Image (cartoon, rainbow, N blue to C red; front, side, top):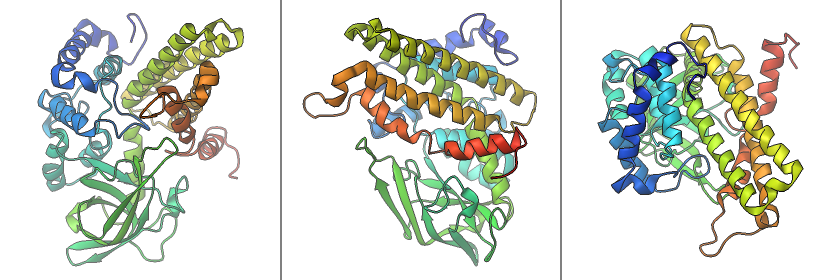
Length: 398
């Protein structure tokens, strides 16, 4: 945060303590030598970039105690305040550090196990996440149950000490790289909607699991279809009770929309700054209609940031999030999609061309193409509008 900006409670203390300077200095030193070439790599639509190098970076972060910042110290984390987490994610993005490969374990699975898991599950599964040794993926969406997640049909039946899983998941980010997945499955035959669902932790490298990458229009394939045909997981990997999966699964999504959004937004602002620089180089900045759109985009990302800070301040005061996450998701996805369109207009005729061999897309072209998915994944805009209408405005269900 800029000096003097408002933020969550304790932000001024975090600044005064020199925590921001500590983070900034560590990143400046760490992103040299072996990891100098990792700057700016990875992220949505670019998860294929230097994956092994970024995996090494994840373990380097862990060795220096920069993973699992929000976890309590008794579970291997740093127990940082929300203000300190905000500082870290902002400085991480500003340093152009590579997109992390362990975020799903760090930000989603870990907090879920801390809140709902057994002592045995925490003992077995938290340390490998903390060390960057185990990667995770999310197994929620299905071909007939995307935004309407409660319609899922993947099933698991108890067989002795195991659950046996049959069904299909889709749009599972980095499933082809993951060691583990967390899945919502139907364990009660004949159940419907939110009832009869359970939350299972599943080893991904086993017979009975077939992972097929989905090639997007950017030519990359970070999303996957995952087919289960008799895959097994021990009953000890059931989180919570049978039938309580919906509640736990929604809590996991709540953890996803925490302080990591601040780093995401600084990344958005970095993209915008590059587009502004491009506009000033190629003359697009001199066109009033494009300059106006660039200014509006800057205002939009600032609104996004301050709204997120206010939401995080509510979280520290234990105010239930309600539909705030839906409002945030609808806003950022629409803003980012428009930024991709703006990038194409700033490029002008060059937007139709790729540079010489190996004929890869320019960053602006990748931004435009991949951002088409922003208003679909993690809850489509139509579903978010329904949630806002029903839960905030009190309108009748569609």
